[in-house]
Image (cartoon, rainbow, N blue to C red; front, side, top):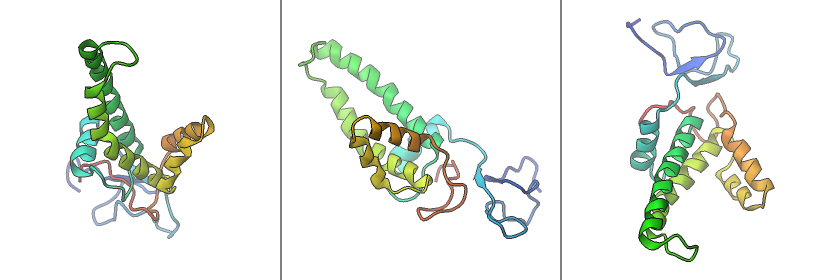
Length: 167
């Protein structure tokens, strides 16, 4: 084993992987399906880079909780100052335009939609469940619960378990 070696996933029920063992296999020694999730969460900059550069409009596959919520924080951190800039430039009244904020929101609309679909895929749900949020009150609460729940620990119909590494 190489010094400092860390496998990409942890397989619950197995000891530390030895050289030659498959570290990403969800199957234990008995052949029973074991739980495997990424060992580390995706960092802020890796999540933003992965979504905006590598996977801008990719609706296929899965996204981990850390990838989704770091991107959510990124859009919030950019939107608030842009709203302040719009207010300073165009006025603070409700009818005043917010052009800069709208341009940013249009630029991140597709990646936000795509990462939301991939996040639901990680839980084994169809991306169409995003439209549940259109139901007043109950839909938003259900969607929030689904986006916060842990993903499936095994490969599902939507792809392999996210590795939380840039690809």
